[in-house]
Amino acid sequence: MPRTDLTSLPPLPVPLPGLPTGPDGPGLVAEIEAYLASLPAPARTPAPYVCRYGSTLRPWSAGHPAPRATLLDRALRRPARPVPVSAADHLRLASRFIGAHGWLQGAMWDHSGRVCLLGAQAAVLAYGYGTPATVRTARAQLMEVLHTTGHPARSPDEYNDRPTTREGDVHLLLDRAAARAARLGL
Image 1 (cartoon, rainbow, N blue to C red):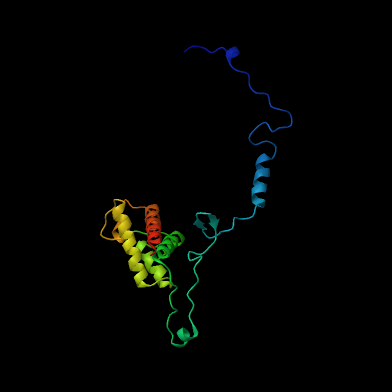
Image 2: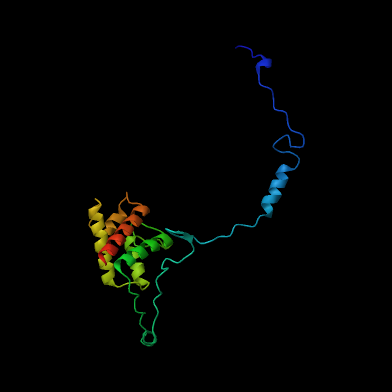
């Protein structure tokens, strides 16, 4: 093995005066630990609703009035009259609901609140937005978009449960169907 000439090695850096010479300089670690201990504990905040204009904490039904029971509804002990929404609004609300509560495959919902495509549509309807006719129109728009984009399926639920489908695909499908329904005035 050849011997190395010590004169050919680069010189060692000379430490500057006043700076710690090692990683554990005079109290550097203790100072960092004291600083980190003085910081407040991070607050746990709910996940933000993300819209195309930025992030803000808003409910999934933002922009739509909440269903309100009238005096007659309360006297007859019946649910409030549903808020009228278009098929396009129903599809947008379903996408927001999935974004707020989480997405699921293989079941309509689970114990943690995640929902599939059908579960989101059922939840939007159950919260009082739209009628069963609105949901049928919205599902027809979903089927039209599935067939025109080259994803033929027997139902939107079958598309939701495919192993290759991701949450982003479902949001894209809902967005395209909502745009188509808005163009058609549905």
